[in-house]
Image (cartoon, rainbow, N blue to C red):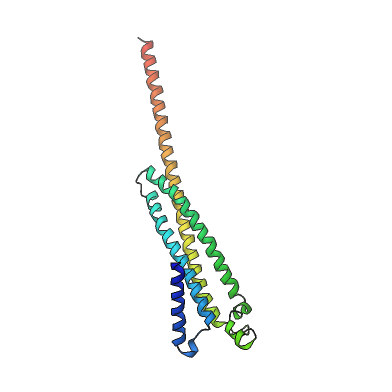
Length: 201
C-alpha cells in the first residue's frame, strides 16, 4: 500500500543518515527502526486528530453561531459520530502512551531493546545501558501526552458547547411558557369582560 511504501522510504533514509554520521552519534539498527515506527505512529495519531479537530470546530461554531435552531440541531447531530471517533482515538492513544510509560519505567526492558548488543556478545545489555532507548521513547511519550491533552481540551469544549446550548433551550422554553401564560390570562380577561358586558346588556 502507499502508506507502507512511504514508511519504507522513510526508514531507508533514516538508515542512510545513521550510516554517515559520526561514530559516537550512531544508533544501533534496531533503534533506527524503533524511532521510525514511533514517528510513523505519532504522525498517524496527530493527522487523525487534526482532521477530527477541524470538523468538530466547524460544528461547534455552527452550534454557537446563532444561525437558527435547525442549523444548531444539525451541528449537534453531526457532532455525535465525530465525538465517537475522537473517543476511539483517545483510547488507542492512551494505550500507546501507557505502553511507553511502562517501558520507560523498567531499565531491564529498555536494555532488552539493544538487539545488536545481544547478537554481538551473546548476552543482554546491562540494565543501566539504556540512555539511547530512553531518549527515543521519552520523546514520543511526550508527543503522545501532548496529543492526549489536546483531545481532552476539545472534549471540554464539546461539553461546554452542549451546556450553553441546553441553557439556550431552557431560556427559549421559559419565554414560550411566559407568553402562553400571558395569552391565557388575556383570554380569561377578555372572556370575563364579555360575560360581564353580556350580563348587563
